[in-house]
Image (tube, rainbow, N blue to C red):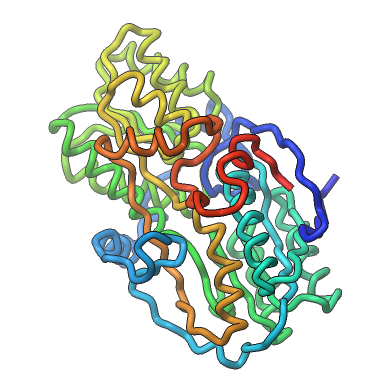
Length: 402
């Protein structure tokens, strides 16, 4: 049954974690079969030199905004005038969400709803009516059209299920004259007031590849574990990393895994049977523990490895002492759309493209993030950015999802 929730009156319930990718992915793309996993698609069609260069540079830009509020920071922003939307009184937000079908999205959804409570108490947002598309383009299109037809939305918040399919529906929302805020994944239009996202997939690929290259030598072998094909942010992660591996003379072989721990272990075991594997690269951290366990099962030395800021990887990284890096796709972005709506109705300028910081967790920071997130479940994301919200830490520890 699909979910349609008026958050202003909805209760909370315990929602079990599922073993899917802990990142922003397009679940409408079916997981590959074992045969497909042995023959990944070429990365050249996904490589964009201009976007690679843009994100390469943005990693070193000092963000503008409050130092202790990364969800309000922005990089190289072109600010837009929102005075035409200025209006007094609490506003109704209508949120068309792609899904909460993986731990990354669940963590963000919890944070978003705690941010909502703050804005309700401040009299900025009256309620947030949410429709969950459960990973379906058709459902999300219907959701957006429902909100338009309902006619009771003051602002549209949209986290698209996929890019091209959602573009016409987003444009229809824009045509109402109400402000539209798009976040996480993009669409092929700029009609929205602001598009909110971390730096991007190429930045992830650059950070991770540079780390592996710095800790390996020419001729070493890296096994790349990829969760799904055809998802732009994931394909960009690999396309960026592969470019740098090739230039550095690192032998890199990639497999699609569907984030299946058994498949991950099988791939690693087969590669270890062929010879030494010095590095593991992942486009999402889910399944990282299974990859490490495959080395343990084989009695092999731990690899140099990149995972993600999901707690399961951070804890295994600490326990094993391996050489690791945790890239992030900043989960705190789930706070920003509601805060953007507040700013828009106050007539404050907002970035047209709101690029949020995206900084990996390094070895020197590992203990601090483990301590700060003690008691959080394995599916929690360390850089969730909700420490100053009501309900912290219990709501996130109990995975109380509206």
